[in-house]
Length: 258
Image (cartoon, one colour):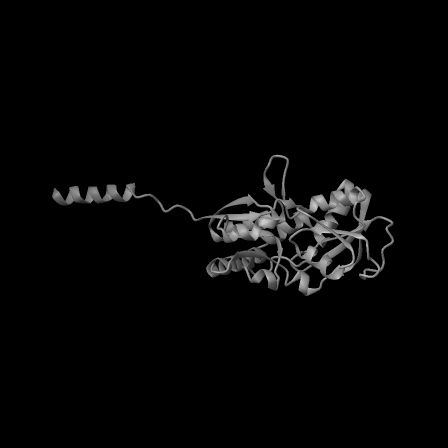
C-alpha cells in the first residue's frame, strides 16, 4: 500500500509540473521603410523584413514579437536589450560591425539617386551639384554617402524616408539618395512618387557604403543566435518559404538581385 501511495504521489507531481515555456524573442524594426517594414492602417507592423523575421523565428521554434523603433535609436536599443535582433534592412558595414554582429546577408542592396522628373541631372560629380539641396534619411549609409561625395552641396537629413520623399514632392529637394528597392517601389507604386520623381543614374554599389548586403544585427556576444539565424535562413531559402515572401513584394529575387 505504501508503494502504491508513493507511486500516486509521484504521478501527481509529474502531472502538475509545468511544461517549459516556449522561448520568446523580440525583433526590432523601424516600421517606416516600405515595402520592407511599415505600420499598416490597423497599427500592425508588416513588410518584407517582418515576414522574413517571423519565418526565421518559426524555423528556429521560437515565439517572436515585433517592436518598432526609430532608426536613429535602433542599434542603441539592441545594445540596451530592448529586443534581441534587428531586422530592418540594415546594410552590413565595417563601421556597424564595431557595435553589432551580423547574420549572413538576407538580401543584396544598392543605393540610387532620385530626382524630380525632367530635372535633367546627368553629372553626379560634386562640382556639378555644388549648392544643390540633396537629402537622405539620417543615420543611414545614404546619409554617409552624400556627406562624403557632395561636400559642397546643401545636405538635408530626415528622421524617416517618408519625410525625405515628402520634401522632394513639395519641391524642397533637388536630389536625394535612397536604398534602391524602396525608392523603386515609391516611384512606381505610390501616387506622389509616380507623379513627382524618377530614379536616375547608375545604381550605387560602392562596398564602402552598401557593405556586403543586408543582414540581421545581433549583439556581438550573441554568436549562438547568429548561427541559429544563419541556419534558419538557409532552410527558408531551400524550402521555398523565402521565395514565397519575396514574390509577394518584388518581381526579382532580392537575395541575388536577379
